[in-house]
Image (cartoon, rainbow, N blue to C red; front, side):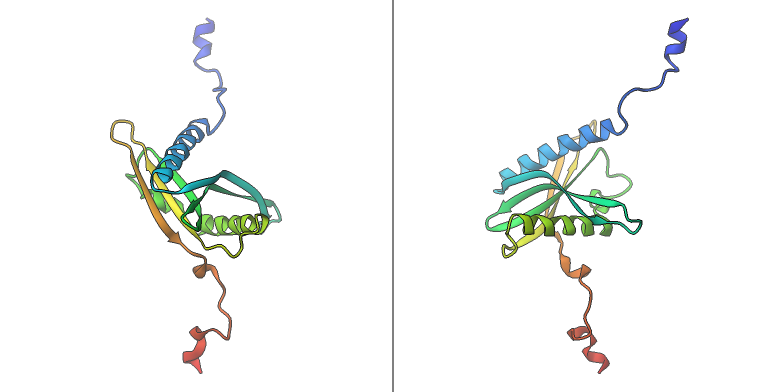
Length: 162
């Protein structure tokens, strides 16, 4: 009788465990790929409080990998998936995620006193289908901070209204 009830028992595995294992494997593969591309790894999974959201809840920012590409500091977001059938992997690096990484990178640069060092935001996508070949792609300079800067009234953008 206990065998019958055992199929109805609650799953005791941690939620998200599969995806976190997949993500950890993807980050390790991405780090290896970056090393082969000539990057020097500085840090992995940098987490720091970056402020509060609109509801006043503390927000923690995370950067998957921090690396040096020559003299440029690179903040690297890694996206790992089993399939890209519904959307490209880079679609998950949306504006909200970009803004959060920018905030985290600002804290990193301030804490480690590298504000004057050139930097950029890269993305590594790791496609790990179950029955196909692994595919890793690096996109250097996937985005920059310029599109998040607020326009000032003195900026050249407003000159044509004069």
